[in-house]
Image (cartoon, rainbow, N blue to C red; front, side):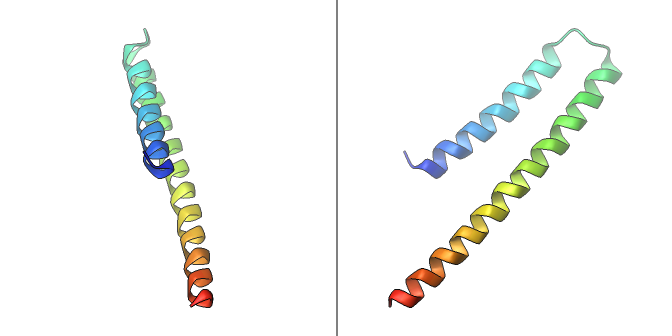
Length: 69
């Protein structure tokens, strides 16, 4: 298993677990929907940050490989 696959699995598992916890918690529907929306926004931000970080690292590594050739 690669580190990337593991991290993707952790991210997806975390999102699914958080969603299940929100859906199964004894709260009013309006409050649950608000929490789900907040969690989705937070996850979207984290995914965007990780994607940006990966893109930056790939770009740096590509430059390193070009210079080595």
